Amino acid sequence: GVPLRVQRVGSMLTPFFREGSVRNWQEASASDTKRFGRWHRTMLDRGVYLAPALYEAGFVSAAHTAADIDTTLSAARDAFKLL
Image 1 (cartoon, rainbow, N blue to C red):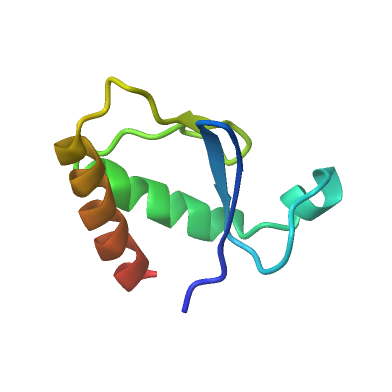
Image 2 (spheres, rainbow, N blue to C red):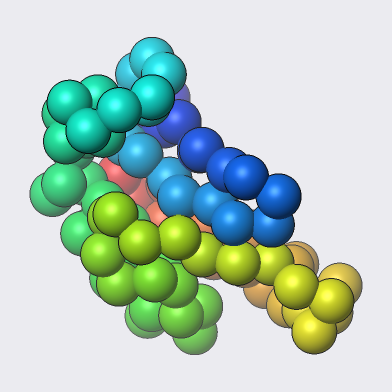
């Protein structure tokens, strides 16, 4: 129930809290920055350290274990419930 678009290239990704595509600055800057902030703080509270700004990319790498991914998914589920 949370409007979200995740843009990615390869292993780089950025979540944008908005409906619709994000293809340019105008679309990216129309994201809900307050919602991103609440989501990011909730992820931090659960031990998941993500890029701190809406316009930065996160990366998934071979260094991330299945447990790391599971922890991130669990934290994200909790964070989305609070939004």
